[in-house]
Structures are given as C-alpha cells and as structure tokens.
Image 1: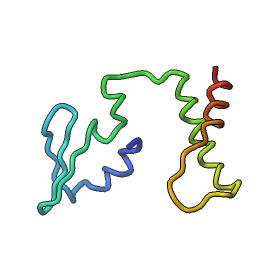
Image 2 (image 1 turned 135 degrees about the horizontal axis):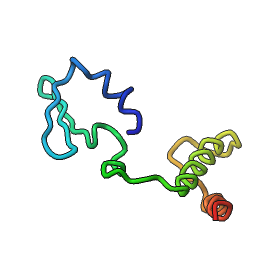
Image 3 (image 1 turned 180 degrees about the vertical axis):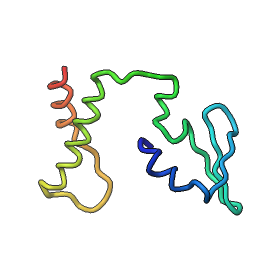
Image 4 (image 1 turned 90 degrees about the horizontal axis):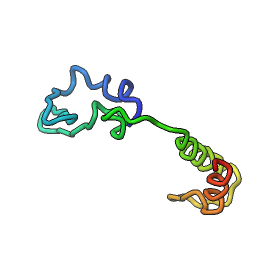
Length: 94
C-alpha cells in the first residue's frame, strides 16, 4: 500500500487500532480483524531506505503494462509484461 492516508484514514472511528509489535498494527471490529505493517506505508521504507534511480525500471514496466491492453490481443486474465519489453526497458535504463 502506498497511499495509507486514503485507505486507512477512512477506518478511523470504525475499527479499533492496537499496536501488536514493532511496525505492526491490528485493526479490529466485531470479530473482524486484519494487520497492517508500517502504518500502511511501503514496507521497504520502514528503515528509511532510499529509492535510487532503479525505481525508473519499475515505473517503466508499470507504464508498459498499462499501455499493453490498448494494443489489443489480450484475453481477459492475468498477464505479465513480455520479456522482450522488459529487456528493452533495462537496456534503456543502463
């Protein structure tokens, strides 16, 4: 989850929050519960990790995946970005 303000703020007043460990919170209401790491933020940033320029690889693949259906040829279902496109993204980044 990357926008905890949107998703988790809506639960204020509906769920009881209880810390159950370092960086772990339990949300509960009438027997229904779930756990959230790092206050709903991106877990790999808990220790203050910095994002380097390699994030552009991830962003480029997201854009490629978003554009793919507009080219057609996809049946309903789960798909991955083709290996050739991933290689092109990596080559451009390098």
